[in-house]
Length: 459
Image 1 (tube, rainbow, N blue to C red):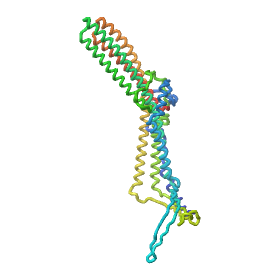
Image 2: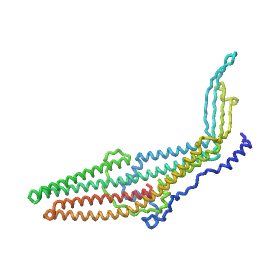
Image 3: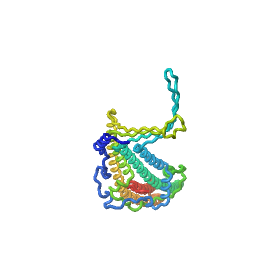
């Protein structure tokens, strides 16, 4: 079919007048609203980026095995992977309009025609028709909409990588939390053994008339409190065990066996430069991809104001006899090209432009806020590690001092130099110091994992 000169001139006019309008703006991922320093405030020199296999830094084969099991069996992660597949297919669907839509429509028609005074005539016809609809995307409206969907799919894929990293971190943290809970239970068990020794000591002194009945009651009360703490510690063990089993994709039967130890944190982590975070952290990549998706949807909404050019074609065969459908003389066809220009839509098209611009502005500010929070998390974890190390050293010293004071208190009580309350307080101080020391050792490990997570380290 030959295109008329007038139609060619009209298309050329529209291409020159509108073809370049409404394109998505160029974005720079480094535009986060603030100037970025050359190094982190907690590190006064640049270093290589964080390792892609940070779990191995703990040198714990059991931990590495559990992390790999969670990545393979966790159902939340499998759901996130399915969302990636769905987003990719949605992008394919949104771009389908750029291509001709061809349909096959076979059918049979039976009709009766009545004529005044001549009776009626009845006839039937078979048909095998093909229909083609094609909107010529001369302005790129459909292409821009598809690009928005492609960017949204990329954001969903980045979300999957963020979920994968988060799952590895939560598994590692739960692993060390379980180790701490078991060690806390062991401390509580040893404390009960010590309290029973004290009860026997006070009971013997009471039998010899060297201690009051009140002393024995206080010792028994202290033993009961220690037994309550042990019950709470054991309950914590089963809670954390079931949580970890769910992360692994197992039934929460609380039968997971892992060693009860809290290693020291690995060597200082290479943090890289702040600007590197923008291209490494999955949540930042996802936020920037969503900003680009919003930009393309603004472009598509703007180009919806331009005329739409559509090609429609119908072809096939039609015959009263089914056997004659293959006869070329029964062929019929029709081709039409049309132009559709919106004149009045009640403000819908302009409203869609303003809506998508507002969504793009929202995506821009969400990206900047996500970036600032990402920098905060890194700086916070770097600073916390220093303070947690100081706290761990102080509590280690406190454990040593309370151990020594407890032994002295037992000797002093045996010889009548101190009251029972002083002895019991020394035992409580020892238990509290040991418990606090275990907690801060686990916090050091959890903070290191948070730092790996904040830096976007891979697994």
